[in-house]
Image (cartoon, rainbow, N blue to C red; front, top):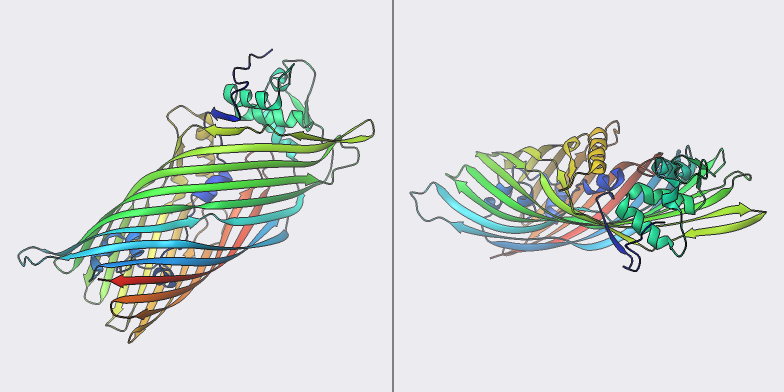
Length: 503
């Protein structure tokens, strides 16, 4: 009999790191086209331009391009159509969001000392969304594998005696005990056994081999997912103009991540002779992160040409996770259909661990059409296969997940084109954004077509942007066992409004 030290301590247990999956990191590593309306309407191609509050988070040298102090903010409306494709069967869900998108302020100080090579300096604060996680998706179709394969994967090697309930023990007691003393895999074995999906090969208490009670040649799957949250970057900036031809700057960035994921999975339509059928498996994840990064950048002025270079250091982010699980199934016993519900009602709170998002380098060119307008192009590269997970304690799970990430993820290439044409106080803008997929062997690029208009009132300006984007993701049902893949195609329409005041 186990000595349950954790009985009566409530429903919150603290475990070693073991929560994130390849799917979750696929979301957390994403970046998107976000910022002020002017920035978005030109596809973010501001690396060689500066002079926009969101451009400072792109190239730190951009703040000393400003001629006046400026403060501004943006709001954003987005409409999503997310098409899930599983076994060649499409399923589409729609959603809408309305949120505060960007805030910034820059302060410019002109140097009156003619002997100094530094003509002006500037400092700024900018707050921008790196990405928004809000997304609802659904997939349905026949699968190649069963949910029992998931539980068999984790049950392999777990002693039968560890996943039984004895005496006055409860589901919550054992689930919490297993997570603390043995690990995540034992918890999954417990859920699979208590829901009758798997059984030990023999009734020997030391048995570590298991078999499936689901008998079927067809596995009809339905997965509904609900994501919410954001990755926000706050940049503290300093920049200067050297001898009227070179802007240099740096940022210290604070990152904040809030990410929630709810997975509601169904497996149905098993054979009539299957002992277990109609499985519903619910998983929820909450992730909270805080981190830092730094950036360096420069803009070289060559008459009407501009050359921009910038470097983003890796992002070092500390993450904490909370998870919760519940499963139900139907089993047949002596001609009766019995519904089994296994709900530990336990929140697993995991140790802090570190996520290292790889560095990024950018190069950009711009041509200034006198005072009539401009054209700009930017290219940046980020080798996402260098992503890394780590913790203060040795974690074989994090090491294995890091290896999986490095094998699955690839180098990301992003190209941005943007242009602006001025007609007195009216500005017309357009752009194109393309980002390669972050997973190897997936050749569907993310792309955005952008348009916008701006009005200059002298001491203030107003901008409106319209963005039509397509984002593609390749995911898998579960982290192990049942790893059938599916695709998400997210078609996003965004409207942004920005208002800036000069002083």
